[in-house]
Length: 279
Image 1 (cartoon, rainbow, N blue to C red):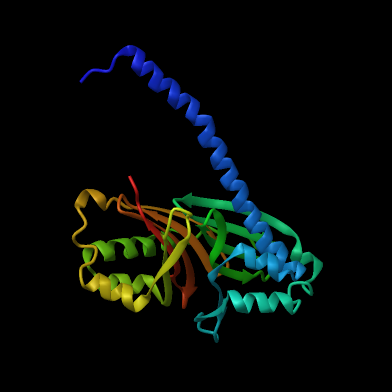
Image 2 (image 1 turned 120 degrees about the horizontal axis):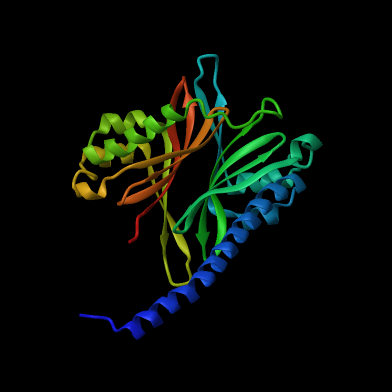
């Protein structure tokens, strides 16, 4: 079938006209993401629970990798949305030293589908945030954060290869059906979540797996039947600070936004936000 030159020109013109609209929509989406990030951080320091509630998903899980003893082992201290709102109302954020409140970085690091990953850094803390788009509004779903030991603490990528190796084990373990390889990549308290659309209004539900369920699915061969041409793996380590890191894993089959923590000197995945790749 041939396409007439006049029709081809009209099609090309249509694409040219749609490109500015796509860029405008993307810019509006980025602005909406930054508005959510501002509400999350500023609401905390203002003790404004209503603002934090609007910025977070009802299934929010906020985690901190806290050292437990002298071996380098960590304990994931965890709080849900209700706990965070209660802490905000109690004024913990309002009592933070002025130097700790200074905003140093607010950056959207990755965005795919209805998922995004961001970094927010103040003088006293940094947070790796995984967000979902729920009924047209961006909301924080997963947070991995740490207090800074020093205000000058910042990005340190010296262990990027070690982080990337863990992400490779996670992906290849799945495709190979290698449960031992998968288990080595996961923290026992792993939380793997997927935003699933419920209706045309864009409302979502959150589907979750823990480490045991993901290891069992790997052992059962959940990834082994994936065609070879869908298994190409691309890993990008985006940021490392303190005992925390974030990375993006992409294949032709799915993508994962991953947050990792260092436990006894080994990097392990603690939070995963994923979606299937749509052609």
